[in-house]
Image (cartoon, rainbow, N blue to C red; front, side, top):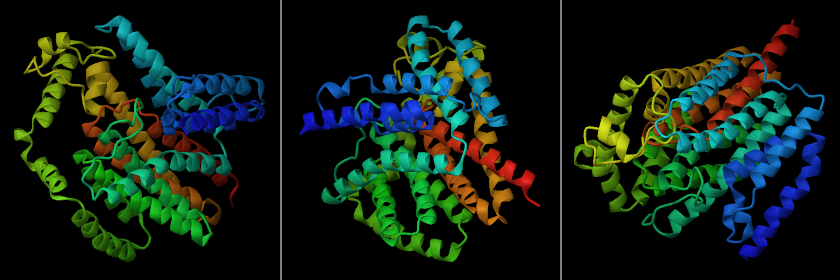
Length: 417
């Protein structure tokens, strides 16, 4: 069975290459599928280490260079901020505490950033944006449905985990990824006409939420609350949405066993939690490091030597467990500032799309998607405060969608009477 999975993924990837050469948009979609879902990890044979992503990336870049499509992203504050952040990461690597490890990590991060910029360059119209959202929903929704059924079958007594060796392999990471994808499912539900598909997406949303709870992630619980609150605020039917939240939330919480409730209750007693105190120790280390070194420590600073110099407890060595303190420790105050600026500009750009598409039926889809992306980003902003997911690629793909929608709405406003 596992060999069949390896063969299936290999056939899909190589069969897609002619379509990628014909249209680089197909390459971006395939890259997102491979990098987000990591389907090759679901087998146990040769596919687990085969360089599918590299093959797709090279083919996509070749197709982009040889095509007549625009080679640069649309001019926007979001793309400028992303380019500034990427440039700063390269600068901080020159002053890294551990040059070899930092350079190796820079290579991995730059691949993600390059393909994010490629997505911004060639994802330009509604159809391409819609396809990208579908790919993200399928890629993460697979684990949401699977994890939700696992939670139901086990009565919530066992933790949900993501695919091993990926960004979302841990229980906390897969939970946050599912929080991000639920609003995107809602957008697709709003966009489709088929009744069966609407019901399928409703089931996928419920199962994904249950899987996020089944991960036993305390950060994910806070992220779910923030995401649901924003989805409710952005909803045009607040009465119905509020009623569903009031009815379904207690049922989901009551379904979970006592051990889950005890873990969630520990949020209010973090002083007695060694994991929480370890994170706070890492946050102090990142702050002290950034104060001492203008360029930060570079990539991969969660090492005993660094903690011995900057942490209150030098023996408690932890990863940052926060996108904000990860940016601060690795890239200094300027790196953190650029990252926050990127998030703020993306949010403002999405809000601009909502404002300027409200009274245009042809742009209503863009307003709906922009609202749901805002809900996804607020969930990531809250849950990411407790996870080292600074380089997680899904938020950058959502930025690409916002950039494309902003350009489309602006074009529409220029020609609209």
